[in-house]
Length: 178
Image (cartoon, rainbow, N blue to C red; front, top):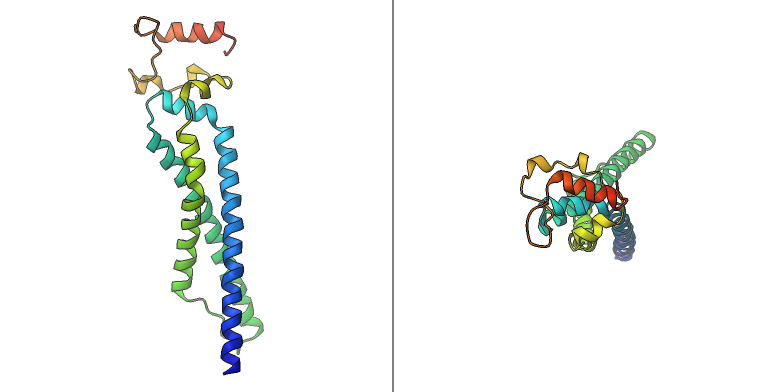
């Protein structure tokens, strides 16, 4: 009876430590994604200027956050499998196998952490104004795939008339952005 209570306490303690670790890891992922949004402001502005919708930007950043945490989960599973193999070699009488449900649960939780903690950076990226994002620095119009979107991203003059690509390039060059 006393042994069961000790094992139960150790289990609860392990869960608490894991939750704190997931929280810290999630905050780290969120910070990485916020830095990514800041560093990629121009890219987001270009994508929005050529027709990307807010949900496209949200999906991109959520996918990146989930992929980041999934790869961390895979690394953790590989580390756990390696440690259990070493333990079984050193102490053959000790069962140290990892059940499949534990691997699947671990990977699912790691993806969930990326999803939960990636929402705020993804929403922040999707709310960026394309004009302000493009004004934050140099944008090389020659490298934009504007031919794929013939009507998207066209600038217009004061009367609503589209400005040609050459006029746009000259406008950026005259403003010191080229």
